Length: 227
Image (cartoon, rainbow, N blue to C red):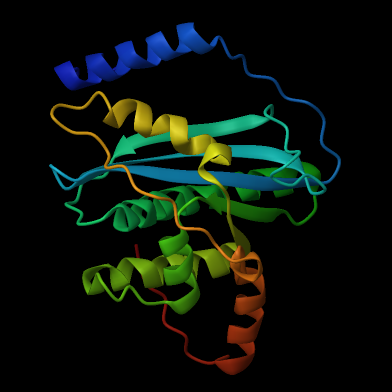
């Protein structure tokens, strides 16, 4: 059901139906004793239009599972949407997609904690090495206009007590929600590039530890960025 049908929405629906017919995937949920939330975020960028499309997938899996042995069932939420602002790089598109996924993770975390009656860990997976560097440093040197959104993302990650992990593109599950659409966009295709590799000791950013350290350093009068 759609209250505002348009040609682009019909095309998007048609592409979704074609993909469903090609893949034939079904939704399954298996039992979890000690759950955690795994959020995959990704974005595609059109250099010719300076536009992007973000997407995410959320899984509820066991804490013992890592990216190598994580189940493909237990998919609880997914989304793909056009980013409504002009962008100058794929990294800025990745940041917008990250913010969109993180903002919505709070409701899933609260629901799962109410069902299991225990604290829930959150892991965020991205395949963008430049985004990991920005999240670690807190600065976007080449795009100062994105510093406000970057600060908001770091703040919400601390509130979520999340870990951000870098993964190879072939293990990025949200990739199918972005590239499939962008490749069929009018006169655009995401530029090809060589993926930057992350060093072993920088593949994980633990914002739960950063949150504990921040509480000790400034326990008074902390201002919160609204987004």
